[in-house]
Each structure stands twice: as C-alpha cells, then as structure tokens.
Length: 168
Image (cartoon, rainbow, N blue to C red; front, side, top):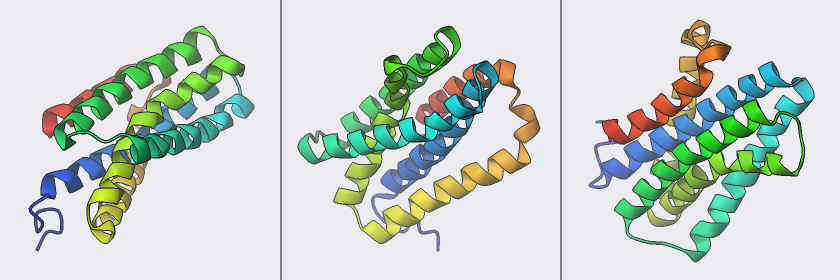
C-alpha cells in the first residue's frame, strides 16, 4: 500500500514531497551558481540563507493561514519569484552584502508550506513525505549531476519549480 495514496489528503503529501525536493535542489543549484560566480566562502553562505528562509516561513505559518489551495499557489509562485530574485542577485550583484539576504526568499515559501503541513496533518506521514522528497533530490543529483551545467542552472531551476505546479 502506498503511503502517499492511503490518506484522503494524499495530494498534500505529494506536495510536501515536491516542496522538499525543490528545497534541496534549489539549495544545490544556488550553491553551484554562487561558487561559479564568486568563491567557495560566499557559496557556503547559501546554506545559511536557506535556513533563514525556512525559519521565517515557519514563523509566518504560525501567524497566518489561509485556504489550503491558496497556500499552495502562493508558495509555488513565491518560490518561483524567490528563485528569480536569488539568481539575479547572485549573477548581477555577486558577493556578500546586506542584499544577500534576498537569497533566502527562495526558501521562505517552501518553508511556509511545509510548516503548515506539519501543523495540520499527521506528522509521521508528513515527515516521511519530507524525507522522501529530500532523498529523491539526493538520488537525482547523483544520477543527473552531469546535466547540471553552470550555464543552464538558472533555467533548470525555474523549469523545475514550474513543473511542480503542472505535475500537481
């Protein structure tokens, strides 16, 4: 029996898998872009910006909730726009300064969506879906690493996020 379809809310678990997958892949791709554009020290900061974004998204979820469908669409669109802002920041204005915090916008909306899912649905299933999505991202990176050329990373990232909305 498939754990993602055993629940009447299987759509939520599928979305958790997708957002978890997106978080991990986005972090990797932004790290690789930052490493290509600047240096290793600045690219390591991507992990910190990811944690800031996820944390702020979780904080917002404690104070604002809306209908489930609206949260998904807002999170999907916000993630896409956040990745666009992050890539523009990294490519046009490389280096670490105060505006680097804008990079966390790519992680804010998935953090918001995942935090709401953990609050509203059975935690073991949401946790399983979250870890399953991260595991899929790791396996995908290992299998398709040669396809992630630095010149096309930005386009691949936006296509990935757009694909989540289409697949769901």
